[in-house]
Amino acid sequence: MGCASMSYKVLHKEMTLSVFYSNPLRNEAGPLLCDICNHSIEKSSGWVYYDYGHNFVTHFGCVADCVYGKGGNDKDYIIGVKNGLINLDGDDTSIVNYQKNDDEGMKYKRFFHRHVLQQLDRSMDNSVKNRKCGICGMDVSSDKKKGCSSCDFIIHERCSFLPEKIQHPFHPHPLTLVPKKDGVEVQCVGCRQSSGCHTNYTVLYQCKICEYQLHPSCAACPRRLKKLDLTLCYSFPYKNEVSKLYCNYCSKVINKDEWLYYGRSNDEKRHITCQLAVGISNCYVTLRDLEVE
Image 1 (spheres, one colour):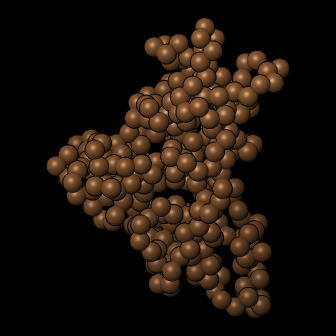
Image 2 (image 1 turned 90 degrees about the vertical axis):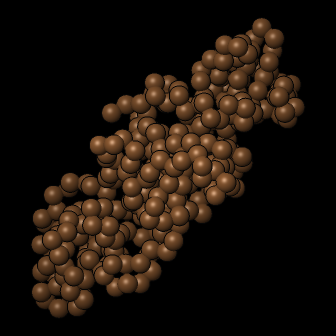
């Protein structure tokens, strides 16, 4: 009852703290410490209260103790909890977007990181050699990139512009960009993979209504590759085909239920992952056409 009665927003020392049902700082490189008790905060589980403007994060329970006190059996505590349950306003602020356009256009705040991200100069390529992007998990050394001056966080410039909501043609509901849960195997509807060269994303496009989820790169696959005369198919177009299908790029079997690129004129077949391996840097362009408010 105590947890259920906590408001979505709590005023603490002139700061407005919002509750998050998954840790908004889960992608931070260093440990997280509660700003009330100074003990460690688990990144992968538990609710937290967070105020972006003051960079203040705390255990859900620490805020609850401040609101109701630590005595779980006394009369005042019970009355406070019951009043809290009655007064809940239902204003769900658990998903907050902190994007802000700086006047110079060179600093960015996105929901996956609490600090300002700055454009990094190409002269830093050698210093970030073998570093991985905090969003897609791929090497950042030779690409345009943005980094955090406050901690060890770096991403591709292209990853910083991923739309936060898209409408994919293969799904009736909008898909929202959300952090991937630590330690949870997630199978993408498109490539049917949970691990691999292009699946190390720390974010996913996910449907809030059903269990539909896509890697950003799979969601961005263009419907038509004109130069190769290939069309994106959400399943093999010949439903009654009994022979095995082999990718013309890697020679491995293609599952008939997974997405693939197919050319009818020459019977060319490719895994979408094989095509992504060739053109990953340009595939995000397609997402701009799918972006919705």
